[in-house]
Amino acid sequence: MSENQIITKLTMRRPDDWHVHLRDGEMLVAVGPMTARQFGRAIVMPNLRPPVTTAADAVAYQARIQKAVPSDLNFTPLMTLYLTDKTDPDDLERGFKAGQIVAAKLYPAGATTNSDHGVTHITKISNVLERMESLGMPLLVHGEVTDQNIDIFDREHVFIEQVMKPTLQNFPALKVVFEHITTSAAVNFVRSQGPRVGATITVHHLQINRSDIFKGGIHPHLYCLPIAKREEHRLALREAATSGEAQFFLGTDTAPHGVDAKETACGCAGIFSAPTALELYAQVFDEEKALDKFEAFASLNGPKFYGLPINDDTVTLVREDWTAPATTEVGAGQAVKNYRGGETLNWRLQDL
Ligand code: NCD
Ligand code: ZN
Image (cartoon, rainbow, N blue to C red; front, side, top):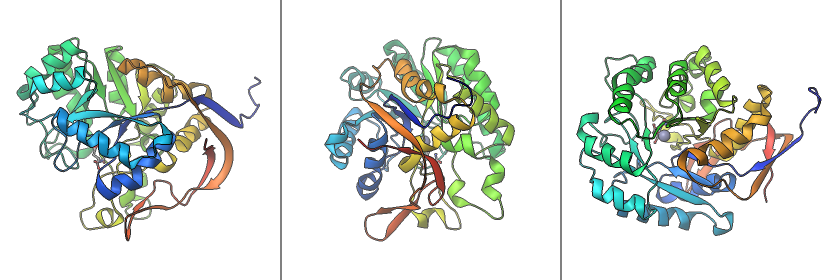
């Protein structure tokens, strides 16, 4: 194809979302179908209240997700456990071997929404990490230190030094996903570790930098954790995502909170990108002239890392201007602001 020929239609293997918050109850009913419409599978985060800490919790939560999502969408929620100082390695092993859980999530205590039950110190879960290493079960890491004395923009970088490096050294065969990376330091670090370390990249971290949060006033709907960083970091993330390299894959970290919980004196962290995630990623790859690398990032690299087959079916995106819906209604009278909602998007996902 000649370089200036414009691609107007893109068909590729159905992507998966390797990091999503589907919540529970009314919120799950509202947002679950949106992820299921776009993706074949999703790694479902376990930070409910109370969190999903046992295989039995994960099985019950998976059933609630399946009930909330139309069965004709053929969506498979992949379940995770929330690690705590008390995680039982035998329960984790049984759940993994039975296919009930595929990974476990490390939230340093206090890192983000509902993470009060997280791990107080990585040494407290050595027995669990040893077991995961021997099982080949991926550890998913929220890579930020929680020390309030560390500047919020430095917490990922410091986590690499204080936690990531020693953990990977102590468990030399442990598979790790560095979730929602936000810095060039994380990109370089992931690359330096080879195939047993992967990283998810959100679409918002490919699109916004920290100045966008404060452009003309404070934008609570652009506040998430890890917080967006300087422009140079956004550019490093775009380069990594569009490189096609196997270690980087799609994970939206879509994290809905009601408008009331965002637009308040102490607003929650989380950006809700589920309604148009694929369209927005397509726009980024298009802008980077890397649409030929989009399928690797969205549909191939993740399954390869997790040792799962790629999806059989395909999705088609068409180049078309349309206005994304501004909000998502949740039950009676509650709404969530859609990331980039109300704006004109240039790509559109075709429904089956
Ligand atoms: C997530 C949430 O709301 O559950 N928030 C966020 O800003 N990403 C928690 C998380 O995964 O960090
Ligand atoms: Zn998350």
